[in-house]
Image (cartoon, rainbow, N blue to C red):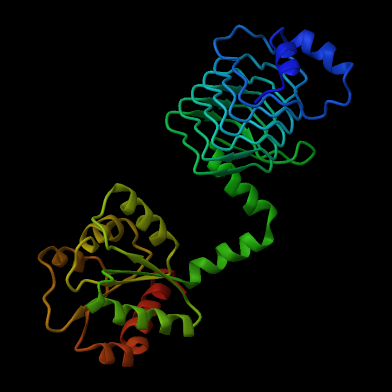
Length: 327
């Protein structure tokens, strides 16, 4: 719980707090955990709250305009509707904080951490976001614009989305990330299918052969009914792939995923597989008109598929990828 003396001082407002803290240099990290400042009765504009621990605090609607909050801890805090305009929020921990409908304008968010943070319907604009980390952030309905990802002393690069900001920052500043991204486009092979016991062996053996040939196989296992999230995930993976191998034997979700992928990715070949004793599902005929969908490879057994995986599956897909990319 919050330190009673410190909470009492804070409740008297930002000016009183600043005077008190100037006389208390030993208070490096004020303990304001689980403090309840909700309702707007407390004005903390320009308050010197650097290093303060607000973990679990109720701060909805609080005015932090121009406040010094660097290295503060707002994990699990409720900051819904708070005003953080022009605040110094460098190295702040916002993990699992509620910032819904908050106003964050002209603030410095450099190196702050947004992990499972709720920023729904918040305004995040004209801020410096150099070096932030943002994972599993809820940005539904958020208004984001003009976010500077570079150091203030460097050339200026701006984006309009926190998640994009983190990605572009890594791309610009981490050579390993650039190398990985370059290699992904030439190495990733997406494998689609059902990993039921009767189908798993052949797909696992294909994956092993791909590894031996220095590819990066990525398996998407449709054991559960497909939904929008799964479709979006597999589409994202498909955009990264050199080519796709799809087992259409006893299909469940595969038809839906191919419908999301094939018409929209003419640069990514698709190599269908089918057990000889099975029949192509009715709607698969629709995909044959796309030139990047290869002729279905029919195999009699696992041993047959494994013996010819390079010649009949990988090589045709790789050749088509080179043809589509003009190399």
